[in-house]
Length: 141
Image 1 (cartoon, rainbow, N blue to C red):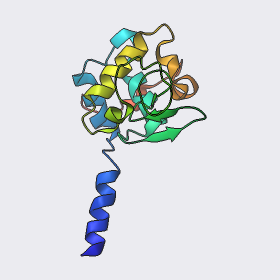
Image 2 (cartoon, helix red, strand yellow):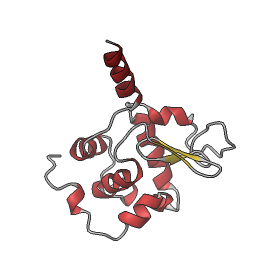
Image 3 (cartoon, rainbow, N blue to C red):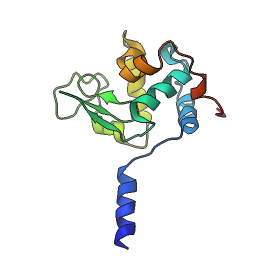
Image 4 (cartoon, rainbow, N blue to C red):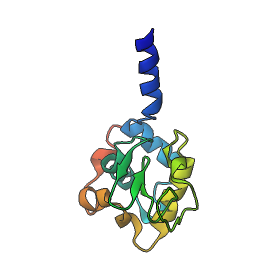
């Protein structure tokens, strides 16, 4: 019984990890395909490399932290315990829920910035100017 409780706690703490195609559908349903000129395949690629589609992914950097499925940075876009510009006007913890509405809204805000999707290192290194058809291959969207 103790093992079952432990497993349930670990599962609850790990957050939702989307499959590639399920995530592509969620993005499409939320108006991300072509938003600010960024293709659906770009969004799927970006989040694959940033979080592996995990809503509770956290990456600590020197002086900031990246949160959630989009790995949104606390120095510029959300508020945690460190100094922040908080461009999305949200607490970083809001980016770690299975309800991805806040994360998507913040990603839309970020991509409207002049730097666009280049705000994400994963996109610059793995997605920019590449053939991304594999990120939507086999998905019914």
